[in-house]
Image (tube, rainbow, N blue to C red; front, side, top):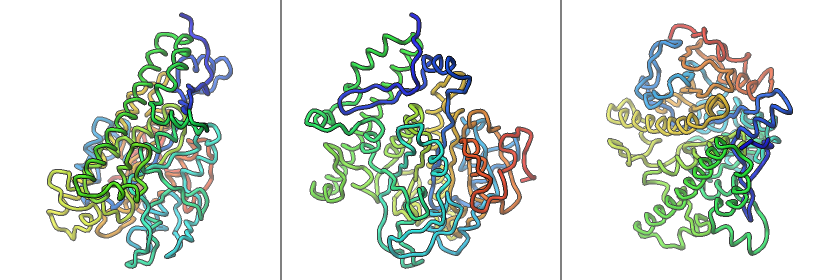
Length: 468
């Protein structure tokens, strides 16, 4: 069967559902017929971890390609060749003495947030991810996608005199407008795949799988595709259905957890945690329980958003600043991440701190594995992406913004020379990395916040930085 050229903007549609499609060979044929440009765009993701890392357990040994992953980074071993482990970067604007909020609110802006106890937030600049979204966001259905697992905390942290709202946001569309992250997997899924068509029929469609809603359109499309594209489309639809089923299962599990704790159904509603027949797993039990599946669903949604070109910019917060989320579900851990990060050099607490850090990198490795398995022409989705995993401080006990733990994964469409650990001069601006990433997103900035230029060596395979 001869493949019919297909527009990159082709979607599957049904009542109440709209699915963007992954890059198919039929789309590549259409692109080659119209232009010589690479049809695979570059994607940008930022994953933020609060509370820093256990001192002495994050830094890799060696430099350049001759490096070994540290105990905390060990979960990334299957993806070592796709990493840039960057040392000695810092965010000078966050070095103010505040414990967490300045480090979180200004992580992607490179600026110092304004101290306030109210809702009059001021970050000082637009965040790096939103600079990219303003440049490429018009090319996709969603300019950007902000996800997380903790609801925004309100009130004032009287220890430092900051509103806790600062700790819940890393993305800023303007210097005074933080972008709210979606913490409900079902709502995030619907944002990607469901339309807002009015009427009773559309309302009833919300209780049906989106795959069932677009199945007729999918069958029509299959007739226009070659064998390889048909298989790729089947794999994509199965991936969407799998995530949808896992959202339903995890929500039901969380509902049962709430009931076993003796909370009434009314309490779930009061928390705003019920959408259709689903509970919001982010809000029904914030202080205990294994939230690994919740995190992985959100990471899967980011992957689907990139795979279908629904968005090219996304952020994810593993937790808010000073989050009370409990990690006792991990072997050998007893208590919350923030509490344990204040280890006071207690060996037992430091061992727990390291285990919590490693869990975060395990989730990052999960996401990288998903992206590496998705082919886009002669590359993978991971090859065509840049994923920044970082924290706003190094040792959480000292609240230290020097020597930030920063890892970049993915080859940025072939513009990043990965598989290296790079040690820079002390106090090299983190924003130099942002300049390099923005340029690779088609946003050629000359300066960002306190940057002094593009971070050296990102695309130079021979560069290894100074001796670590």
